Length: 442
Image 1: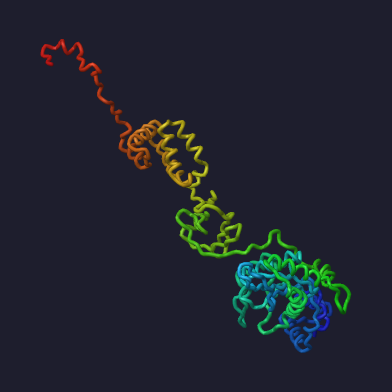
Image 2: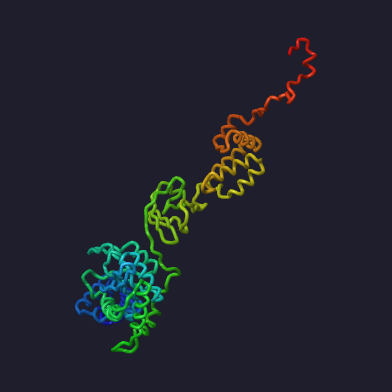
């Protein structure tokens, strides 16, 4: 039988896992010529040992292993400057069991945005990340708990993955799973919230500034039964924290969108391209303050910087276009105008009209490109003539009218010239040939 008393002591050390201890046990058995237990047996007997001896009560917390989080039961308050009413402020607490170091922040809501923001700020305050995150079974963290599985809230899981930590909620009706945070909540309620009970705060910023001041004093307060403070003990624990990611997690919203025939999706009245192969497919869109990400069947297929400002802007990537659309990329308004100027004044006038007839210049590129193709098909000379004829009919000619002129050959017809009048201001003047005719009549 393995020495489970030794194994239990080793489990309290940072970085030691049951799998590692089983492998070491197997090596020892081989050296002594014994047959080791399989890992399943090894783990079961260890669980039996812990249960029979209630040894879990004596396990020391490992530095940098766990961060426990919860909302305090007691609220703070902010005075509404318009009505004088007290607005409740909910207090978030994150505690590190090893050192007792904590982070506290007040919010006006316990919604998911506040919950996620609190975690991001806590990690920034600690300067690192624990390997395990232990929340209560709040809806903002846990979707559902059953005997078979715990379903973590999608956004909460996404945040945990961003920071490289694992979410392990406390067991339902097992408050001792979160003894440290429960204890911290009570202590902090006394040290911070009760101490601030007679102060008036007109904004959340004022309240959190006062909370931070009290929090630092609480963390630096010497322990009663041992040397040091939470701050000095945290200085040791911080060495075991995982590093922060390069960028903090951004809270995201999700929506389902259908890729349109123009290979774009619409998000908040702005348009973002998607690889054209996904036209008419439904995609999942992750929306943050700065980025739009598009997923198909769980795989990210593209992302764009988020557009702000006037509605109906387009963010289009050349790689997303069908091959026959990519040729438009090299063209812009100035280049179309330069090309038209080389053909003639009438073609230039039509190009300007195409570009200026839309709210967004790019919307006229398709017509300009079609005009360019007409020059290839019929010649630049005929195009210039057709544009001139179209402009003689209307001040706002359409692409279709120019195409019709070229297709019917109207541009080849001789110009209509007005009959030459020989009359003058002095009356009718007859030529010499008139008088030479014998049958000439007046």
